Amino acid sequence: MSTPRAPLYITMDERDNVAIVVNDGGLPAGTVFPSGLTLVDKVPQAHKVALVDIPLGGEVRRYNVVIGYALKDLKVGTWVHERLLKMPAARELVGLPIATVKPEPQPPLEGYTFEGYRNLDGSVGTRNILAITQTVQCVAGVTDFAVTRIKAELLPKYPNVDDVVALEHTYGCGVAIDAPDAIIPIRTLRNISLNPNFGGEVMLVSLGCEKLQPERLMPPGTIPLIDERNVADVGDSASPKLDVVCLQDDAHVGFMSMVDAIMRQAEEHLERLNDRRRETVPASELVVGVQCGGSDAFSGVTANPAVGFCTDLLVRAGATVMFSEVTEVRDGIDQLTSRASTPEVAEAMIREMAWYDAYLEKGRVDRSANTTPGNKKGGLSNIGEKAMGSIVKSGTSPISGVLAPGESARQKGITSGLIYAATPASDFICGTLQLAAGINLHVFTTGRGTPYGLAEVPVIKVATREDLARRWHDLMDINAGTIATGEKTIADVGWEMFELMLDVASGRKKTWAEHWKLHNALVLFNPAPVT
Ligand code: CA
Image 1 (cartoon, rainbow, N blue to C red):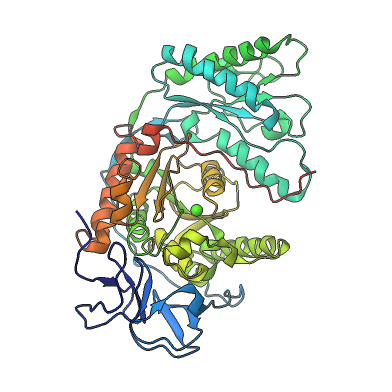
Image 2: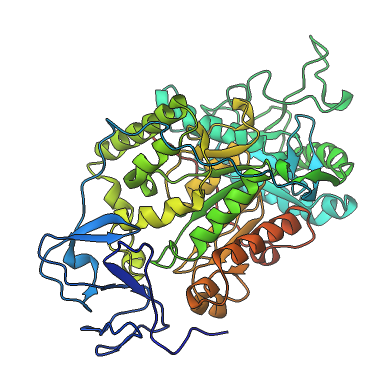
């Protein structure tokens, strides 16, 4: 498997006036393509070449969308990079097409199943994990110490439990907890604690004097009643007990007393988790979050379209799929509002975009702050071009719901379909917010390459190009680079992804990030002030 030696470029739409070079290492000036196109400049791999003469000020089109205006005359065969383009202004959030596109309903995809852990609230886990929630960063060291001992001394006694994870974060104190936007980090942490992979078992470690008190994090009614063992023994017998180990409790004399208390409480939860068994459930129980990171110009040609194909399969199977990353869809907002299933969904999407515009404005930047040096080196000239390649992850289905940052899909009554979960594009923050939204599987595409992984749910990583898939053969789960070389179609790779999802969800296969235990930190999105 290697990229072809013959010069090859890819055009996304017949109306485009630029294409991207496929060959590893790029191509030198003077290269002649089978079409007769001759390169004027050396063009790096994944970078754009002008297919026709583009005059000064002329539109540069990719995905049949204007990704920029030429800053000088660009001769056919020229390397079209970001310094030669003026970025178009962001689409205004008024006068957008609202629910105008009604995609032809796709036939249901039936008969696909996986082996999952059914929870009392109806959700399904793909892993069986004890999560220990922390109210505040202060307790992180103690919790980590206890978790190391739990893994060594307790976990071997409970073979049906996959792992123990401390939900460490930097929030909880030193923050303006009554600020309106503080609801975002608080509900994020709350909803992550209720992720389907944790079986409804909620256990808190608190310091005692922190602003985010346990009752504020987990108000009455948020914790499920598992069985008689977690019923509060005072007052209303039907309410579940909030299980908190408080380090400042007078009862603790010395560090080991705290560690012992955490271990004792953990064992109660481990006993119940160990009783969980996988059962055959329909593919409709998948809740998949998709995102990209370390993108290049191939992202929007290979991996993301394959994810989009797979997204359509998942929606047809009745599953829930969410895409995110506000700054990476902002330039395509008209495509999204037109695909909204109802005007209410379109309005919710506009509301999230407007909120984010204001958030960026407060920091005196705009959506163009998104792109990285690696994106540009990978051939993406600006956020407009990056957005077009990012949105294709959402496939073609109608968008049937919108979540604000940190909200849970299930709590909003969403249990199927394509939804937009508004999050920053930051890989760690997006992943963290999708965990709160209730994902039980995560799909991550990358062109530049990132070893990203999460401790809480399996992450399937998709390489956009052959060279990355070859070099990172024990980090990338799927090679979508075969699409660029013509060895496979978008549909081939989309189906491969769908089948792999069912295997990974069932625990039959582990992702590379799981194999190596590569886990990124939870990063709570806190737009409110710190104090
Ligand atoms: Ca991202």
